[in-house]
Length: 197
Image (cartoon, rainbow, N blue to C red):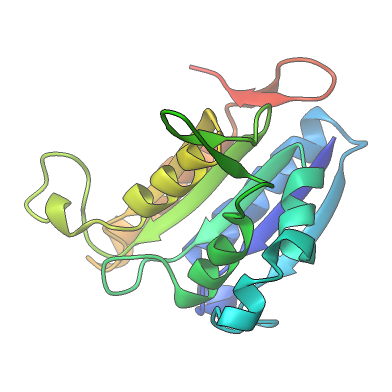
């Protein structure tokens, strides 16, 4: 199994999303010691913002090929100003590639990326879940869910730690709950993993 592991938090060693995404990788290794992992730190090695020249050559880019080569994609995402880090957005801009990850058919867009699992470790300072007072301000999970669904990913799971900015006790409880969810990852077959109930 080939895994693409991406981190995008600017918080370094203090990052909750990085800790959770690392725990996902550790759990995948426990369930399949033979996995190969390609690691990308989009803060340490940021991608430039999209330009017209870059846009015109996306179909030959290394970023989209890494995605296509992966069986599982694990993403650690911070939550800044109601959305994903700009570093992660620059990567998303490079994997939504017409003719590679999506196409247009007679009835509209068709996702071309099938059979992949995407696991997102998302850390949010406030509480944005459905029904929360600030739910309408949440544009990270919604953006990532839209982007991956658009390119054809149907096996998409979010492990969310939220309320991290509400004090140390709330932060620890949120991270512990997310890590407990990670520990539920188990193999489905020799090449795939899924989150069990």
